[in-house]
Image 1 (spheres, rainbow, N blue to C red):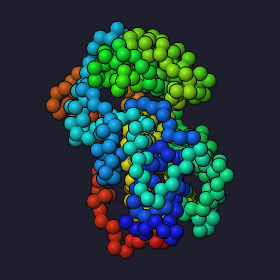
Image 2: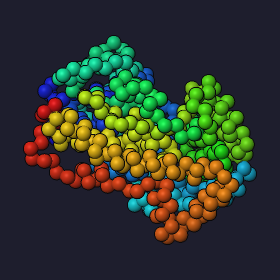
Image 3: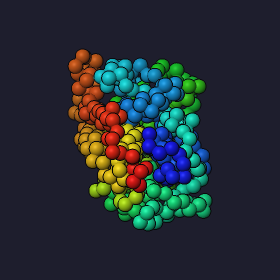
Image 4: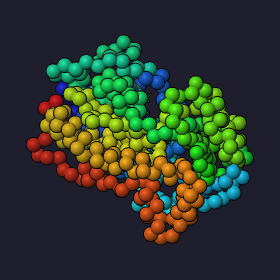
Length: 414
Ligand SMILES: Cc1cc2nc3c(=O)[nH]c(=O)nc-3n(C[C@H](O)[C@H](O)[C@H](O)COP(=O)(O)OP(=O)(O)OC[C@H]3O[C@@H](n4cnc5c(N)ncnc54)[C@H](O)[C@@H]3O)c2cc1C
């Protein structure tokens, strides 16, 4: 740990109390930084979807001591099953087998619960402000001035933009969104609804429609709740005014159990809906402003690892700042170490789009076949790595590397 939380300790303002922002706040406070997290939403965001959590973020959560709580809030599923429009099983893969192929490190957890685990028992030195959107940034030779929508003006040594795929920090400092997002040709939606019959039918399984062009996945939660996500192909990048209607139109032909889900789809404000996109940036920092999470490295839900990568990247950023002599050195080392991992995941997601949601009958059949073969030893590992990318040890290796003796952390040199 560097400097204790005194007024001499370096100060970071984190924009966004999502997974990446909260993980960074925890880890920098652990290293002695003063942290102000400014979140636009009036309180914790209740809308959610299921996150299969594995990979670098899982490793970071383990090192930060969060895993027992994440497991407690998480859900266990026995298998993932492809079903046709009449609900008949077409292929399946055991969740445990998939988890084993990933080294046993997989937990399914709703996004608000993962944020809860990160938000609970925040370490000393972290102030979390809700209803405070970042609205302005001005860099000075010795620091950065941050303006918030509640009228506060904060002086900091570093501004970290963890404000998601439509990042305001990125827009203010790096340029317009259209220069930094690559649309992959899909829209996605997610919501939670109550349905005792469907919940009983799910029986601890994750169901995915075996369909082309559009598909929907179902997870049973506690108390007869069902969490669904939908993905459909479209070249339209303007979002519809009514996401519920858009989902009903895109998924109308998918049959059981989609019809039930669409009937029970809640009011639009409870529906998550967005383009499926990746962030594309030449550099992740400029002066004393750095980006993390979806703001700079969104891999898209097609890679199924955005949350994990957000947490892993936040961990790497905090460790590199702690090890560096100056903030600038820490930011440079963060990007040098973490960018190759992100690039590999983004590339795997782009290559895998037509497998995630098949675009031809042949691919649909092949996906079924491969999933069926995944029950075989050896093939399971191949399928797991094809779906999740090459395993990365960056987080574990960094945590195991001792601090250089000369380092006082960026805290010292600022
Ligand atoms: C349907 C779906 C399924 C997914 N499944 C998985 C999965 O299985 N596994 C996985 O690892 N990932 C998954 N992901 C991806 C994952 O959810 C995201 O990558 C992750 O949530 C990104 O975290 P983040 O903290 O970077 O951004 P966000 O979660 O978007 O958080 C950004 C925060 O910043 C706040 N904010 C925005 N603007 C401002 C501002 N101006 N000032 C202050 N605050 C602001 C927002 O309110 C929000 O709280 C999935 C995504 C979707 C959509």
